[in-house]
Length: 484
Length: 95
Image 1 (cartoon, one colour):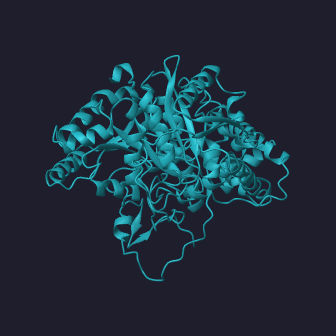
Image 2 (tube, chains in turn brown, purple):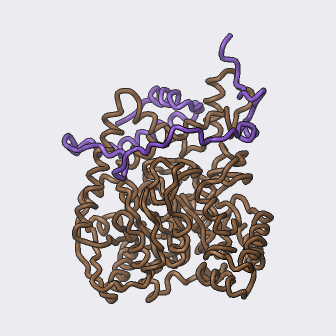
Image 3 (tube, helix red, strand yellow):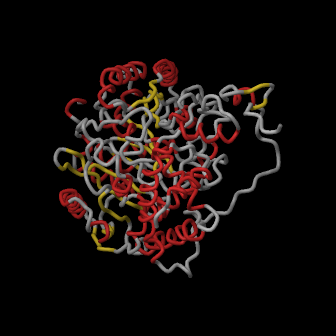
């Protein structure tokens, strides 16, 4: 069962080939026997999963099933889940049992999906390797000495290891696409505002966006159908209708114009990754697409701009963790300031503290104009690059990450080198554009991802473009040896 | 852009973070490195560029001025570190 895609499982459940209870038990068994090797789950919700599966079986029997009814899913531990520990990968929230559900979780519950558990992640989604988690590193299923990427590393590893048919992730600077690339799965970051942020623990509110992590683009379309939509509880939720994302999957790519930004194929890109991406683009030419070289001249400013905007917003968002209302509190505080400082100093890990401090500095009196305001001006330049490009091309393609998965511990002592793992993904967050990573080959037996960036709210086209490629290639169907 | 150890202490205070004396030299180095990375921003002339606060052109939504939230204080306070009579307890602030 675990080698079937979400779409195949959905059809099999509705045809009565097996029950959701059997399917859910089979994934729970795999998690208990295999997850100790990769540490992709923080919490496994066995009993609630089996209860939800039993309810789904009744719904299927009654003929009232939705496409995700009875499908087991893994949820990133950034989404609040009522009655279930929601840690965000941090000691700060190690004791936090959420009193309510994120909108995304409510949508999945309403569809009758089954939550298997909560997946490991970089602390507060700050990291590109999953090594900043309070619950320990996640290991890449393709080689357990390598990182899975981050911050949605647990979600990516769980899907790659066939411990769940699909999972959710969040992407602030690449946190869906980069781990999808490093683990050989499909990961979609929708347009900013497409999926509700309500109940998704905030990192950088003008960048954060949730999306699906799956084996195939077709599965991502089914997941996005459930996740997307306007939510009045999110002040930046997009008030637009949600199309059926599966409707255009099979459209022809004849005449599709693909833009290749020359800045994405220069210095810093691993040569073999570059070759894999170029081979993928030749497949698109075989499908009838036309390739055009373009320039996104402000690309070099994306990382510096991001490392002002994201820390500034994080320092503001994370001020809510004060040791008073929920989460970690230090022992025996002598006064209120000591309570704040030690609860936060002890409850947060090193990378989170670094980013809070950079943000506090960038927002402090006398520095606001030089840092945050300056970064917001550059953000417009970066965004305008894309606007110009999309006047000439339908989608933009390039590598998702500059190299395949690196070794555990290899970059954890050097924040700057780690930050450069996201050089190709960050700009889409700053502009608010959707992007998808699809498996496009292997370098030294580790997966490589092709990134496809689309225009605002053009997720249907991204999924169509990804799906057509997956019909003529089988990179997305490969499984790591120990997890077949 | 290089920070001093005193800058690090001041920033940590602004952010209400206790950090140990032993960790200050590494923060000094790492935060300075990050500021050097973002320093590239200052070379670009942006005097005519409007700041972009948000990716989408949208206005703040308004809603009817009616009560929509119900009282959940017992549920929300059940996960607080210290509560008495529906009040969050902290060390004494007023003598």
